[in-house]
Length: 508
Image (cartoon, rainbow, N blue to C red; front, top):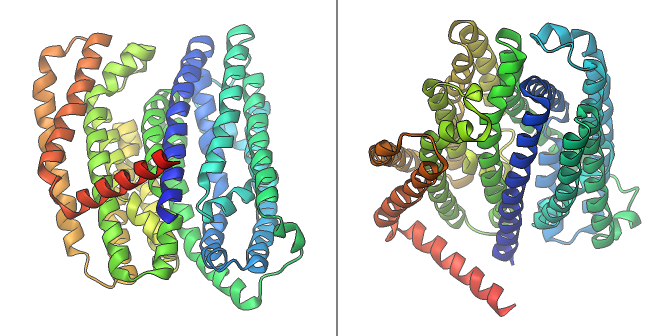
């Protein structure tokens, strides 16, 4: 059941995200051609500001999800209800705090926006974005975390994507017919609320005991554990928010808001790939947590190796594809005026690869509850990222902002997370992990070089050449990885797991 639920979560996550990719690109294309890059910059900047404000959530959801693994496995309805009641109150408080801080920031908006401030009522648009963020905490979003902890993320995914299809279609109509940025934003808010209400109804129906124990309270000793985990998680939340969301704010402050719009096109592609992979790998997090509390460390470490192997393969292939196709695709999609030079593109791809290769370690850290052990590392990463980005941005522009992220990761995250998981979750040294890591980096570089040689005759930008390059990126690296790793224990395990899954699906 653990494997089936993981695969369901992964299938609906990746499948739904594939649909999201298509819808986002259609919506983004219509947005650019109807409203232009100035509005694109405003939208991207406000989204980043509100992501920074979400730092007040401090990882409460992650801490509670970990606390739910054991009572769900033991079918302790009272304890599950007590955790959810705690989460409900905490999320309402967080939403209120985000709203208050967000309103306080309104007078400071002009100081972080170069140009574009006279295009639209900036304060009104910002308030709408702020309400969308606050509504996520107020309108039952916390209930989706129970499904996640119970290995049923696929239910959340399905409802989310059904609402997305309808709302994006409506947004496109609004853009084409009315060219209204305000209505476009309001539809996004409504979709967010409706999606949360659907999930809330499903949770109430599937877990009726939540109403039975609606006044259940966590015992003091369990609260202490939650608070301790929360303190550790909060450091990771702060880091994640700073690393992912401050780049656009720094770019807007030191370069221009329009540059934020240009960067957002590249970031859309990268973040889509990262989100897809996170949906896939996080689909295993609850199963890993269940495995960790019920199986031996050796089995848990083997699954870690298998998921790391899968991560190395998929992210390596994706990085090669991004490097080769990024600028040709952007040119054909929205035009040369939206391009970055190859140096900036290379930095974006390196950042993507480093981020991707740490996802399995992060998933295991969350699943095994190692929030307290590494509580200060994320703070160091976040501070380094901001300081280095601010220093480099005036000197080398957008590349400097992104290099700040890369350098801060290399100095902290990329080595610390796997070391912590191996030491505290598995009780072994991390040496073999890093050997495998550098081995795969070397293979990715070799494959990237050969793919570049092969596609060199197709340098002219056209859709035909783009698909030829895509075919090269798909066939060459994956064929090479298959030949090299087909006899490994990790590959064979993944192959057998997929075969069992498809066999069960056929029988159903």
